[in-house]
Image 1 (cartoon, one colour):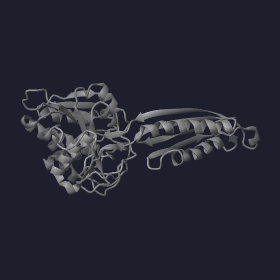
Image 2 (cartoon, one colour):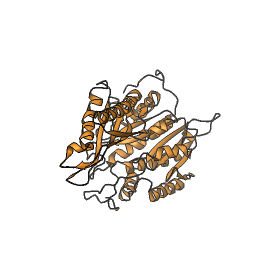
Image 3 (cartoon, helix red, strand yellow):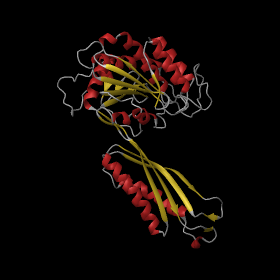
Image 4 (cartoon, one colour):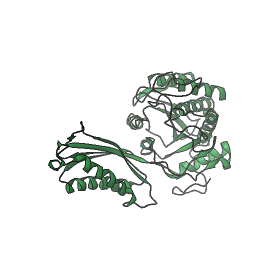
Length: 390
């Protein structure tokens, strides 16, 4: 299994495809599943692929445990001289989705051979367009989660030692919202600023005041991020424009703070504009919700992980990430969890030298397989609302 896993990942790494362009990857995955005797559904929510491994004989309908892997790559030019580096200019697997997909294909191979021992039916979900946070919602709308009892996913993580596993109940990754603010002032010649209502100055005040939305309006023990990432205005050195535009992102873990940030951004923008005799238009768009891991599913993942790598290599002392993941949309349909698979101290994700460490592949496969073979029966001594201990 090891050499074939590595070969699969290297193949995928060398042939990356951007979000919503995963035609070749999707076809490769579907063909591999057919070779295992499965009947994959293709073009699910775009280029998504699903397949089902039925549980062994049972007197009652078995629960369905879904496992998800994402397939898309990023618009980054790969650097370095890996023998399997990207063959597509300007595109690379800089977030580990080649590893995620290879792991789930490895799981499919093992579990099809052991299907008579499965206490639950396993649904394999190969998702497109995670990086543009569109694929998960479309797959759910296309029925990928119909009848699913629980769902689990993994993500390669360079902040954990190689082969270690981290998982924690509760918020694991942040909600990701966006805002666009257009400030409407009055243009004038740059030599006569008194004739203008300068939108650049007003927008600059908005940017500075937004920094207090987190520092002075939220509990310092509750994470929140407000980042202005774009500022557009003007066309020449000697013209005060009539309009300025700023845009950015908001990251939160708590629904109350999420609502409060939306209100604060609108209030700050409108207040600064009113004070300077300008007007503004604020568009706040709610994006991916937070990933919130279910305590009961986390306990099952912990048990599988400890059986795979030992208790000393499994941690629940993890800080939530303020990055976003559209895995959250699956969790709106069924309880589940995302665990982190340690890749060691390599180049960080979303950079031109990132590479998924091949030595972590078998750890991911074994953890998934142990979880599926154990099933979804709650372990003794843990209530639904209790947190696990590793």
